[in-house]
Image (cartoon, rainbow, N blue to C red; front, side):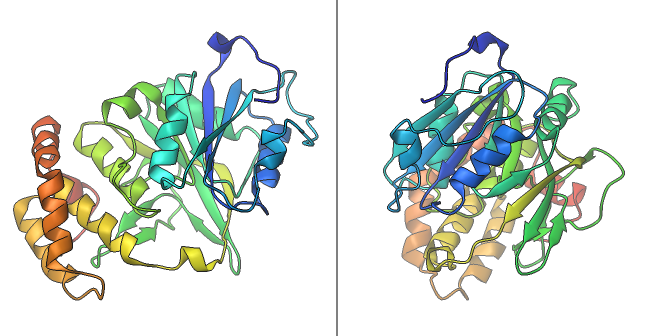
Length: 308
C-alpha cells in the first residue's frame, strides 16, 4: 500500500483489478481511475497474478508516480500478489481483502468516464439490481459498443448491441467492469475458482446469480472504454473448452447437458476423459447448486430467449 489510509467505514466501493503482464496498461488504468471523478469514496486493490514483465513494480517499490487530481481524498491502493492462479482466483483473492460493501471488478486495461463509479453503485444501493455493468466500448481495430452479453445457439458469448432506454436486466455482465454487492458475491461463492486461465468466468457468475434468485443489469448511462489487446497468450485454447464444460456440468439440466456434450465432441480439444474428470470432481457441487437455486436453467433460457 503506498497511499495514506483513511477511515474505512466511509468507503462505498472496493475496486479490484487483477493483472498479469499489463506493463503497457495498468499504470494508465490507475491514472484514469484516480483522475476521473468517481462520486463515491473507494479503495483500489491490485492483484498481480504472477506477472513476468514487472508491471506492478512501481507499486511494489512504493514509488507512486501517478499524478492525482481527483476528489479531496487520496484512495488507498493495496497491492496483492498471487502466482498465476488465473483471473477468477485472482478476483476472489482481491475480494477477500475488500473492506467496502460493494465490489467493482475491473480489467487492467480500461478507461473510465466521470461519475462512473457512482452510477454503478447507486443502482445497487437502490436495490435495482444485485450486480450491474456499464456500457462497454471495445477498441481496436473498430469500436464495438455492448450493453452486456448473451449466448448464441452455438454457446458462444455475444455482445448485446441494442441500447436500452434505461437500466435493463441482461443475461451476463462482463467482468471487464462489474459491480456487485459484497454480501451477494459471498453468498454465491464468487467467481468459479476451478476455471482455468480466463474465459466464461463472468457468464458463470451471472448465470449463478440469476439461478440463485439475484438480478443482473446494465446501466447504459455509464460508459467504460475497454482496450482490446492482441497477444499470443490470449489465443483460444483448451482452457476455454474446460471452462465451458465445467459451466455446463454445474448449471445445466441433464437433457441440456447431454446436448452440449454431444456438440462438444466436435471440438478438437474435447476428450471423454476430460468430461469424466470434471463430472466426478464437481458432481456433488452440482447437486448442491441444484438444491440451492430458485430458478431452473430452462427458466433462464426462456427469460432471455436463448436457444441452447
